[in-house]
Image 1 (cartoon, rainbow, N blue to C red):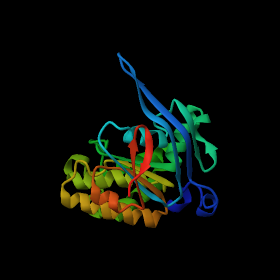
Image 2: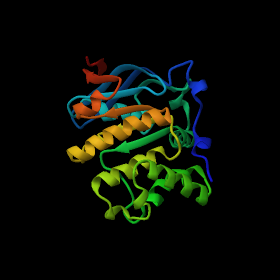
Image 3: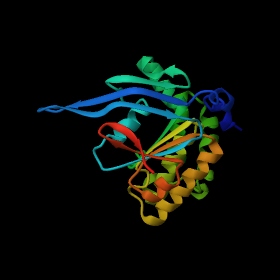
Image 4: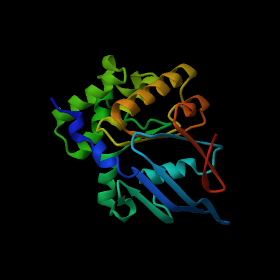
Amino acid sequence: MADRNTYQAGTSDEMSSTPLIEVRGLYKNFQTDAQIIEVLKGVDFDLDSKETVSIMGASGIGKSTFLHILGALDRPDGGTLTFQGEDVFCFDDTKLAKFRNESIGFVFQFHHLLSDFTAVENVMIPAFIRGMHRQDAGEIAEEILVRVGLKDRLSHRIGELSGGEQQRVAVARALVLNPVMLLADEPTGNLDKKNSELLHDLLMELNNEFHMALIIVTHNMDLASCTSRRLTILDGKLVELI
């Protein structure tokens, strides 16, 4: 049987001496027909391994933009992002894709699951991208789906699952390769109160079990209150919320 811990990027000993992430002087602009909009204006940010952080605030202030840059889904216009001591944006596109696959899990408001595939097939996809054998990929996908409470839904297609179950599949897919950091963008945005609370509890439990860092963009005060740090973006800079 495949051991999911075999595929974890890095070890706690390797990550303990320096921050997991160091951001310095991060800038991001967007060009419209009429003007250049400055979204991030020299952001500095450190994140330790296993730390939990929420980023709150009104729509349009740059929360998701910042999260996407942290996950190397977008490049900044200026500044540096080092991950375990390496300057991420010095990577070429191939190495950057490998870095995302090995080190980061993503959960979005819209789950982006493949509707024609079963739950276990969706969760296997990152392992296939890694080049893992189908049997090993299937074993670790089933293991994490059982952990998130979907033991009886492994072979169900996505359309046969409830909204809460679909988001749990998305969480399982994000964690199947034991990332050292999970980035969640409004993960409860499409869920009712009961399923939101269940997902809050699950994310915090998984943070402890997987020893991963967790950054959540959210409007949900209950979810934000579970994290060790709460931030917002004010005039293009990160600001600590009390």
